[in-house]
Image (cartoon, rainbow, N blue to C red):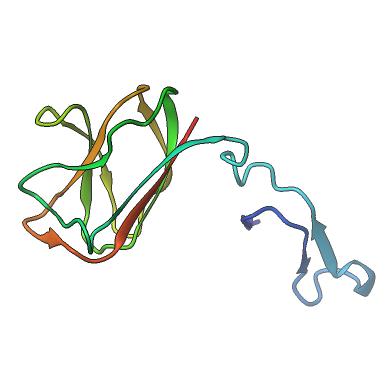
Amino acid sequence: MSIAYIYPPTSVSVAFPPGAASEATQQLILTELESINQNQHVPIIGMASISFASTSVDNSAWVELTSTVGASAVKKAQIFMSSGEPLLLGFGAASSEVAQAYILPGGNGFIDLEIPANTRLSVKAVNVVTVSEGALLVNLLG
């Protein structure tokens, strides 16, 4: 038996394959799929973004994404990136950044990412390229 995951959780009708059940039971109504979205009740405590058209990113230096994540520690992040190049996400003061995660082309979706309160976030390219198109959007979750 295969399981279908539907996001966002909604009520849907799923037909059984022909001949699998009587006419009266051809439809199965799915009303809850609790295991689908374990992030649905996680509050957004901050946001960060960068437009590569106005601020290009390369592999030679870190570029500030946000000066601080705020007064609360971050437990997860939701990441979308429209660039086709991978980036590094770094934590720390200017010239002291430490790479913590890759940001993949298209984005990472939801990831567990422990970021201490008041931490500065920066990015830089993984490859020898200049990223000058697209955007990076990050929701910081508590």
